[in-house]
Amino acid sequence: MDTSNDLSPAARMWGAPGAAYDGISFGLSDTISHAVQLLWPRPGESVLDIGTGTGWASRLAARRGARVTGVDIAPGMLAAAERLSQEIEPRPEFVEAPAEALPFGDEVFDGVISTYGVIFADDPAAAIAEMARVLRPGGRLALATWTDDPDGYIAQFFNLLARWSEAPKPEASPFDWGRPDWLAAATAGRFEIVCREQTTLLYAPDPTTVWEEYVGAFGPVSAAYAALPEKGRAAFQAEFEALHRPHQTAVGLVIPRSALLVRGSRN
Image (tube, rainbow, N blue to C red; front, side, top):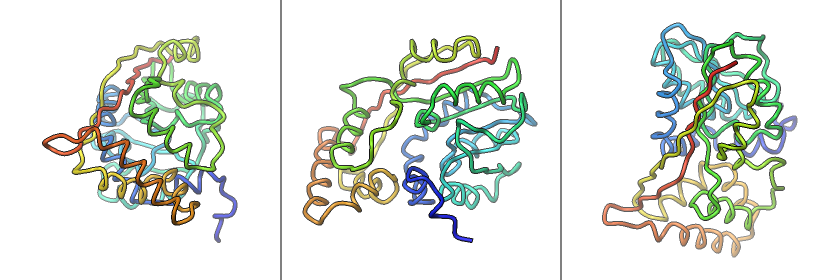
């Protein structure tokens, strides 16, 4: 049965690129790997990966011997994650679910991780409550988020996208999750957290290569591009490439992006 018409606009947008999105995770793989290291999954532990996308963090945790469940709102992502995880042991399980309504019992996971996923939840308070509910007391939390730097590359990237997209602004800012003071207040009573800023680097040959990667693999860029007339598409690409051109070096593009790694312990 085709249930694509039952999906939310966000689920359709994020899921449309399917397995191609794995290339976006490839570009974020340094910090995704560091978040998994921060969680430090152990053999036999149960781990939940929220906003799993194509399952990059899920596979890393499973290779450490953890029993991993990845959730995402986009069936297109989950289908790709299933295909890409066939050879992993123990094989991760992938479930369609929003961060605000996890279909699991209380205190059933030893660890929860989310790498640039839960930050897009429409209701952050509900998502935090759900992470605490499904995590056992003393269980571990690891997040990778974007810092709230209005002059940084990520803010410039999303501002550019907003200028070209007809999609409504998100109900909650994903950049809140990159503010340690906001995180401390939002998780108070549920988690003890510590934060560490770091720079995640994207290396690529040139601006056109990055454009081709994102227009084919990153749902928000793909959707914005598809909705534009031909002239608008050319202008969108030109502005996108202009954003990246200052990062050209002798070895190609080197794009620094400010991230926040968060380690938490469930109260």
